[in-house]
Image (cartoon, each protein chain N blue to C red):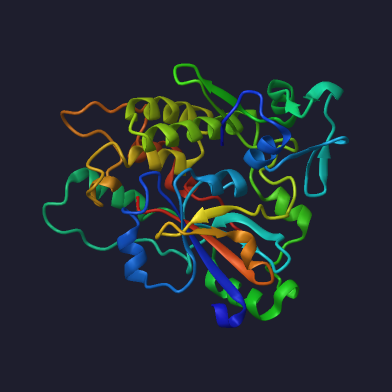
Length: 233
Length: 115
């Protein structure tokens, strides 16, 4: 959307480095900046707790919409048929995923286009106090979770997976609503070079599972409708 | 954010956290949080006092000696100001990119992941 005056900047939240995201980046052949955030610093800076999320920043560097779920178009219920032989856990994951609501009745992409056309006069631009109010809650627990996540990322990156798990567990306990902290940790317990295995995010027969929960158990407990918070465009 | 020292200088603290320690307190954008007078002595930050006052988590990994600090939470919300932080992140080829370099342009920052 650069010709219309809006630059898209994508940030890949991936502690394992650039390789897992590279096939997606190359397939997209994007011309916009495509950045990598191994330490999830945008989680800290903007309050991103799930993906995909977006933040709007105006020409003066001011946030005019805080982090919020950002599917380009409203998600529709239902899913594609799965091939024969798909493991039951993946079938269950896809069934739950099909019930996830992104909560926007309107098109998020249309809202961005409206901002491009109308700038500060766009009805989607929020006043500063509303931006702060909508930016999510933060307390000493979630702040401490972020500190633990920093240590987990450091240990994972420097090859001490057991220490990383220890700090991931603290982060999960202190910030139970932060899905990126959990999805990141869960997705690297299995075969981390297999993109499908990274969606498994739960116990594998014959291997220890070091976390108290997993994606399927968590979403069933919380309810798929709570996976993304509601967005008022 | 990892800290390289348990007794950071005001510059090191600002670099790690985005909060500048001024005579009137800890400041970010147009927000300043008052601090006790002895929070900074000879340019060195009293980490326990300042992090406690700003609602920042402070975690020490005893085995490695590493320290990490979480973001401030003085108002109970993620954002204390709408001024976007000037983050620097690498692109997929490792080249650093500063968000602030896009000043003058509208930006939609989109977070995603391959998991």
